[in-house]
Image (cartoon, rainbow, N blue to C red; front, top):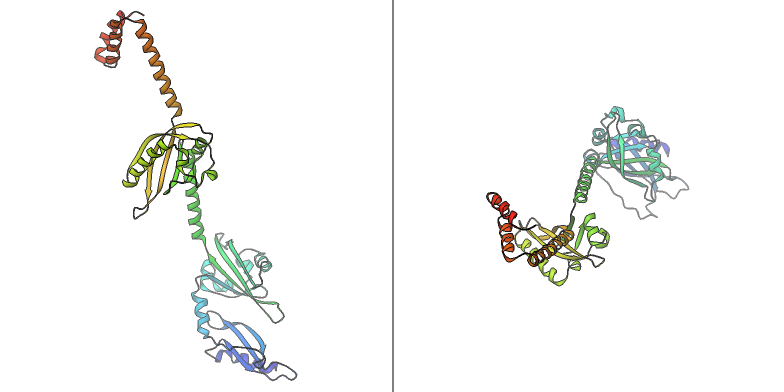
Length: 364
């Protein structure tokens, strides 16, 4: 029987069209009637790994399938991923061009070498073995592999195994996908996002982003302190929640202007109510943003707390009013007229001499 199987194996390369071969056997006191040979070709279309399986057409629902061997060669050569075929000791028995280019080595250096040595990781294959699932597959979403020239790349790696009849690993198939460019792009996006976040946090005023429905999708720390809500608390709340009816109408009026004129920015004052029901006089600068087809998507808002400014203005007006009342009560009509004249011309340089003369006349 051994000699018969050996002779059949020698004939494999003469069977040009098939990668699966079934031939009959006659073994006394055996339930098996045929042997199925499966084998895979390398880039030169020579057999580099095979697997035999005893089958019985009479007792098993077996569907015989044949595959053109050039298909394996084409897939192996043209795969977008790097592919390594390893024996059960982890030595490379075949490697495609993509893998050679990725690791920057030639086939003479790679073939018969340990896979762990080629990727400069003495425990990689062993750790992947531990991660094999019930389908004999292990997948690593992200791993950094070092080359011999001290450069490295980030990749996705998958390992699948072929086992013999006793369940012992016979062959490893490793597929590596270079994701270095994608990772660089992701890191650039993350860095850009961090830069924007730092910029937004450094804005002295409150910065708010509203969606097209007027709901909060972002606020910076200063806006958070102003309104009394953290970013996660305020998400989904409406700007109307912080405005009374009068200020709602005022806000909506200016927002509509921004929606109509895509390039306009509106500045106006409103009275906001924060979490503690305290009134905040705010100056709002609002600018809307749109999609490429000019569909309204939302608005950027800069909030400036002018409560102290408003208070100072009111105090100033009150003091001026009190001072005016005092002067009116203390001065004669002629003196009041002189003061009014001074007030009108005080900032005119050519009148300063006249003002000086008048000031000498006013008592005190």
